[in-house]
Amino acid sequence: MDTNKINTIISRAPGRTCLFGDHQDYLGLPVIACAINRYITITAEANDGEELIIFKKDLDETRTININKKITTVDKGDHLLATLKILRTYNCIPDQGYNITITGNIPINAGTSSSSAVIIAWIRFLIAAYGCNQTVTKEFVSRIAYEAEVLFDGAPGGKMDQYSIGLGNILFLETGDFLNYETFGKPLHGLIVAESGIPKETTGVLKELKDKAILAINTVKEKSPDFDIQTATKEKMESYLLHVPDHLKIYLKAAILNHDITQKARVEFKKDSLDTQKIGILMNEHHYILKEYLKITVPKIDRMIDGVIQAGALGAKIVGSGRGGSIVVLAPIGQEEKLISALIEAGAKNAYSVHVDSGAQIIEPK
Image (tube, rainbow, N blue to C red):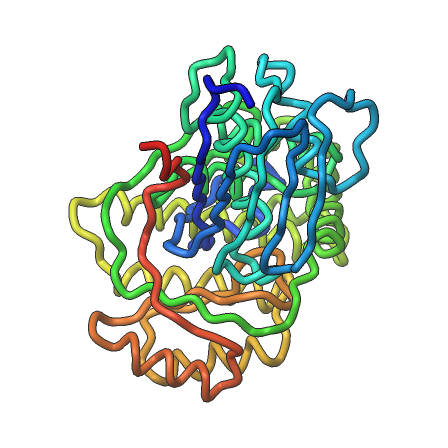
C-alpha cells in the first residue's frame, strides 16, 4: 500500500428537489432547485490491492474495477466508469485500491436525484483519493458530473440535478450553453418531500416531451427567425401559437408559462425575506401546467396533491420527469406533521420534512 495515500475517505452528496422549472432545463431554460438533507454517502478504506471493490449496500450489489485496466469502452449508463474515464483527462489517475461502500437515504427512482448524488459523491471521492490537475471548485465537480451522466451517453436530461447537488443551497440555474447561476443562502422552512412509491419514467418521458417542445419551438423559428424561447413572453404567446400546429401548441404554452412562473419565483427568492404564501401560489401554478399541459402526473400523485392542499399546504407540485416519483410541499411553519399525516392518508409511501443543504462535501478527512 502507498503510505502517501489517504486510508479513509468519506464523501457525501445530498439529494435535490425541484421547486420551479421541471421540464425546462432540456430547453435551456432556467430552473430553481435546492439540495436537501437526504444523502448518498461513500465510505472508502484503502486496501493492499489494485482494485476498487464497490459494495452498493442498499442494492446488495458488489462491483470490482481494476484500476490498471485501460478504459476502452463504457457501457451506456455506466456512470461510475464514465466518470473515471473523464477524470483521467484531468490527471486523476487511480494508483491505490479501496474497499468502497455506497449507501444512502435518498429514495431510488423517486425524482430526488439519487443517481446524480452517487456520481457527485463518487467524483469527490476520486479527486480526494487521487488528486487532479484542476482547481477543484463546486462548479468543476458539477460539470464533471453533468458530462458523465448526460453528455457521455447523449442522454436527454439537463443540468439541474448535477449543479443543484454540487453547488448546494437554493439555486437559480440558467441551463443554456453558458453557465450562469445564483445561489440563495437562506432557509426555506416548511419543505416536505413525499414519495408516491411509483417509479418515475425518466428517459422515455424526457425524450418524448423534449422532442415535442423542440419541434414546436423550431416550427415558430421557421416562420419567425428571431424567435428565442429564452426571451419569449407570455404576453406574446398567442402570436407565437399562430405558427404552431394544434397538436404541438400545448408544449409551447407549457414552456413559456413555466418560464414565466420560474422568473416570478426568482424575484421572490431574491428578496430579503421570503413570502412563503407567494412561493406556494407559484408552486401550485407550476404544478397545474405540469399536470394539465404536460400530463406527467398519475392518479395517486393527484390524490396526494389534492389531499395536502386541502389539509392546508401553501403549495405542492410533482417533481422531476414525472408519471411517478415524488412531490414537494411547502407547509406553514408548525404544520409539517399535520401535512405529513395527510399525505400518508392520501396514499404516499413515505413523507418527511427536509431542509435546504449546503451541497456535496468530503466528511473525512476534514
